[in-house]
Every structure is written in C-alpha cells, then in structure tokens.
Picture (cartoon, rainbow over the protein chains, first blue to last red):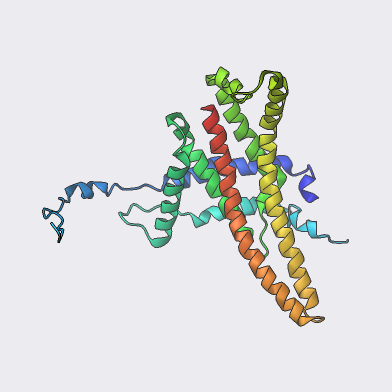
Length: 55
Length: 227
C-alpha cells in the first residue's frame, strides 16, 4: 500500500500543519459578522392583541 | 511496470514537484478574504454562514475553556471537508488518503487534549479510566481496557479517515474500470454498472463530508472530557 511508504511521511506532516496553522486560520478570521441584531430591538411589538372569535 | 489499483495513492510527483504540495496549497484560493463591505457576495455569504453555524453547533457542549479551540476546529473542518470533496473530482489527488497526514493531525491533537486534561484536572482525567458503578473485582481489568481504548483513539481517528476515503476512491476506480471494460462486451451490464457508479459517487460525496465532520466532532468530544 503506497500510503505505508515512509519516505514522504514527515514532509506531508509538516506541509499539512503549515497549511492548517498559517493559511486557513487567517482566512477564517477574515469572516467577520457585522451585528445586525441591534435592528431587532428597535421594532416595537404589535399593539393589537390577538382576536379570538369565541371570546 | 504493472499498475495496481493502489497506485492512485502514491504521492505523485510531476517534473520533480511533489503534487501533494500543490494539492495542499491551492484549495484555499476558493475562500477569499472578505472585502470590507456590509453585505458580501453569495459565495462569501454561504461560506461565512457555514463556518459560523458549524462553529456554534460544535461549541455547544463545550464549556468556556473549550471555546479557545474554536478557531482550530473551524480550520480543521474547513481543511478536511475541502480536501475530501475536491478529491472526488477526476484527476485530483486527495491528501487525506495519506495515513501520514491523518495520523499527523490526529495524534498531536488527541495528545493535546490528554495533556490538557492531565495537567489541569489530573484526578478527573484519570478518573475517566474507570466507569462509575463498576463491581470491585472487575476494576483492574476495566482500567486496563479503558487505558487501551484511550490509546487507540488517535489511531482510530487517523485510520478511520484514511480507510474511508481510500476505500471510496478504490471502489470508484474499480467500478469505473468494470463499466469501461464491459462496454464493448455487454452494454446493458455496463449501463447498470454506470448507474451503480453514479450512486456510489453520491455516497462518496456524503462520506467525504461526514468523515470530516466525525473527525472534528470526536476531537471536540475528547476535548470536552478533558477541559
């Protein structure tokens, strides 16, 4: 099985960790989420209560 | 030179360049940095939604100390799911079929969780080696069994991902070869094999996503035990 050949093991290990530590976190941290939720607090609740036809 | 079906997993080189380096370096251009806009485009919106919701879901069972691992888990998930899915395209190489990569990710991360557990809460971490309510005569046997199961975890983590992806790719290659060889001989059977190949490819898409998720989920569970 070629996966068991030990020659490129250390290289692959180092490459993978370099990508995982140096490249991807910077990309993930760039996804910022501007806070839209303050707009929800500005909406007032409806002033009409629910209408039940039998009451 | 007799080619076997396993040769697709040989770390390929082209003009002296190990292609695994290209396979590890290029997929991240699909995740561009967000521009400083209020509303990004559709692709960026979907990607950021995925990362946000995934991280939120994964961190639900973890206490506040575990939230320090959010960036690492999100990076790991993105890494694995991208590499797995891109490997299903024709003529691509999947780095996650390499045992070196998967063990190289699993062992240090598992070891980190174990060391954190032993360093910060030694008694609790050692207490995981004996389930509650064990009858007294069974205690020595059970401690041995739980220790073995603890040390098997990184091996299982790495080998699970490797084996699932390797098996999937091998099956795809086998069935595709079968369909191709059968085409001049028995076209109907070849058509049925092609349908099987389509279903298998759909399964492999699911497996690619699920295996990446399982890897990160299990690591978060190991962290939850120890933090």
